[in-house]
Length: 225
Image (cartoon, rainbow, N blue to C red; front, side):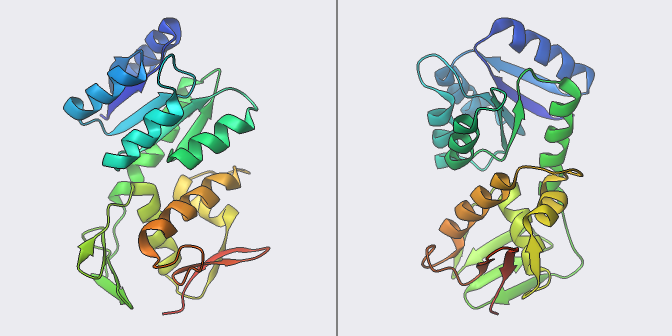
């Protein structure tokens, strides 16, 4: 069972989603404004935040930014169908994934379970060091110099997948399958925005990345080592 914080101002949507998530085995706390959601986040310590972007007062974009400033909790945003502005803005604010309204509970449940699995991924090898970056695959921690980095489960999983075979190129579609568990044509913006946030944390110069490199027309690779 996952503890879900649902931030949604529409009462009918909020109630129906909470009931549906309950049937899927989750326990949900509800907030109807971004301000209330942030207060609940501090006390509830949820496993996942499901966040509507169009909120009264403080909108979902600002809520997501404030969550990311102090927490690595996975955020799944609820966005209007086909609204690219919502999708891009939400991902840039730090969301891990998105579900399009009207929300299908089974789809939301699948995305919740997928994002939770990213934080439980482990390998047999203990740790690898690349220059000043240490990836402990057993403890699922990343250290740069002597500072442990606060990566979200999605950022961590992207780094683990890319660094598993340094120098090997992974396409955006491959990363969508490995990290987000999309088994169909997914949204490559999920990958690009996550890589951008990851670079901001692990690279000395994010605009000139050493660890997570872009291979134009193909995808990304980890290296040089």
